[in-house]
Length: 118
Image (cartoon, rainbow, N blue to C red; front, side, top):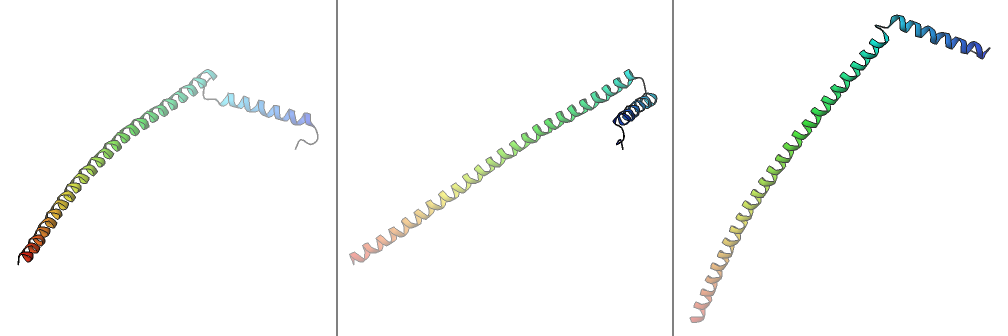
């Protein structure tokens, strides 16, 4: 587009930039200071909103991690209770089995003693 003259190309670019700057000033919603203040306030509002969302997220994470810790501790306690209950059942079963074996052993010994006496 600017093949013929570099100077004409630069001139066109500068004129376009100046035209855009003039149009921006004519159509700006307020004075420069007011526009900067509006931009500053908008940025501050968005920053404050982001900080608030971050704080809410951190708070929610703390609450959820606390609930998870409580749930995990409850599961561990329930598991310990179940383990103790099963341990007691197994212990009782072993004792009963030993008693039965002892009774049967005693019966066999008595039977052998009777056979020897006869």
